[in-house]
Image (tube, rainbow, N blue to C red; front, side):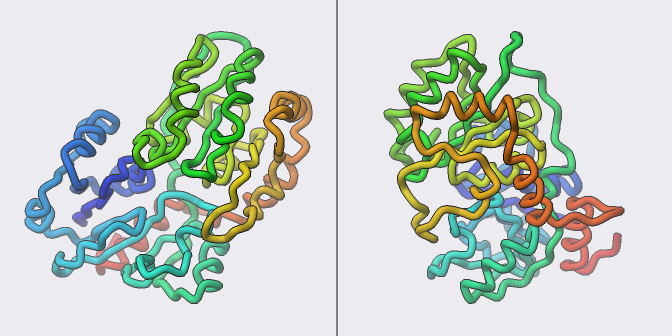
Length: 328
């Protein structure tokens, strides 16, 4: 099977396609040379191009996407598959907008019933299969980032007004007096022209120390394996971190998501911190007693589809092969 992976400008979406790249290989398409060099630096020796003529000549069986950038409709005899780039809770994927092309895909691979219901509630009827979350199947191992006895906290903000950075930047820096801190900015924040968090990011970069580092690698899951807690906001990584059964704190921004104008229900299974002045004490208390553990695990169990005897990647591969009429 030949697959082209359409990343557009979003190198950070490739980890969501990586389980299929490991299985089938293929051609990665990005829109300009800057993104191409960024992808090669991060992912190494991958087959990547900015030349649409090379994509056409490749004649893929499947064009894969993780977001609603342009569908490559000019590819003849190619099936178009959406894998989505997160388990997100801001209402973006199912939002009712003209640019939402969910119904134009030949197949959408869903992680569970929740996201399917969200599309249905908004009046969409995409073609889909529920497979689970392939990114959990083969997380590569990394070494811890700090050589000391402190607990390590991963801070993973989203971008825009919905980012915790607008409210909690100074409180995050304060945490370094007692804990190791890894700040993993959203990829849109790293490309500062796309975000309004430049001042906060510069403050964090300036505050780097032996106990605080900044990471802009797009694959957050390996980082999650070597930390003791995560602090986030509206980011879908809150659901991903639940996979590791560790304390999770929501630093509540003042803004509400544009698509839903309400707080996501996943927050009901997380410890929430409303005030920056309280962040240190909330973190301390959750290390002493992870008091949302039962609620968090129950929420996650009902969020991500699981099936005995197969992995999400295997189920996704099977769905792709069925789509193009290939046998296993």
